Image (cartoon, rainbow, N blue to C red; front, side):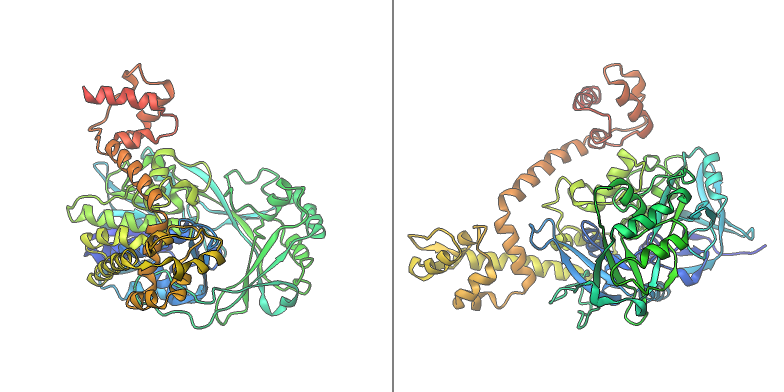
Length: 622
């Protein structure tokens, strides 16, 4: 009998969710075993070689603020950085980085290997060890049993994964890797509900065979920033991406393959991501469009391989190849591998608590695509939260959760456990009702104190936050005290199309005007610039945001406070909602299934109306 020590946590799967779960729990002090079918594909970027984007970039910064690893690793391995939506308000600013795919995976593995509390095991997991409705370990394909206090499943697309290319299909978790069998069947036997989802990926091509002169160049920011709040290296050079377009000839060729499309012919049963459709789906749904945008993304500093973003497809490989070659710049393109679709098992996340622990089985957590999400960032933050909470359970400590007004991570988990999802869930800024509070620039101010109290965020991180708070307050004091005479500033205001002043005015009041920015004002007033020189760009930016959005921030904080009052209204024990006739039929059904822990959570369940919440308040008040 193969013997191993008992672990505090076993993490199954080493994708973005698994890596964050293992790192978080181990750094908090748990003894962790990370089990993966292939040690050479730890943190593999299965789809595009990029981190961040709209709302996703905010999540990466939140992971970093709490003491997670994704931001640090992205900074060390990125080849381009862009801050998206700079022309909009700061709530919309979203960092995004192109990553070196091979370096990203290598850096993650090396990071994990440097954490003393992490052990590794390469093998498929085929079952869980269950005792008294609690998970106490795993069983591998070789029949080896590893015991632990907690288990986190982060199986990604591997559970009964089925890959489709045209009329061909075969089992696989992703290209050239086998799928995982056994776990879904056991979980269903234990009372879990399972479903099927679908995602896809585009072909990869040889960058040496492309004519970039026929494409639009997309450079990174002139002054690239970074994800981590620590002093990670700044980019000194960047690789450009390129933009080109499909055309009517491309669409004609793709349509030739529709009769062999696994999606159109009904061979794919799972629902795919609404906001990242395949190219055949785009030309079918948007028949009035004569072209669609294609992004050519380099996969690293040295490799010639390119990711063709916007051309995800499960059509036959010959159709993909012929259509690609009709795109401007792709006339001589050489394909490394075709695109494909993959179907896989997931478990509707309404079966989870707000810590991501499963309701049917204690001491078992699910994180990542197994919960119906899509995206590296969404997976990573779930892994982080599952890893933290598995550690807390193993150590006999209180669970750790985040509210909707505290983090996008809180929004994501709250959406999943209360609303569920029938299609791959992707985070958007529009999903967050408090997005002015949840900006990428203040994730450290919001979350690092919480991460430090847990023991995950370092003393250095907390010291940086305190310094940032002090510097921001000092900048605001300078602006509040700096008085400006009309004769000095009216010419500047006229140039900006802003109303002149008629009496001495504080700089802070002028900055409340939408068309007056601090860098320009400081450049015009050298004395003001001298007073601000002692403070960094970050503190000055915080001061500007707090000044310009003061009213909006106050309103959102008041709304958040009202919601917190509902959150504080605990629902203790399992209630028989079916015996409450004043509730609507749908509310009774949903509440019985989800069993919310607070009145606030109940109010956000799809199908529970404000009238139903009032009924609950009366019932609970009694």
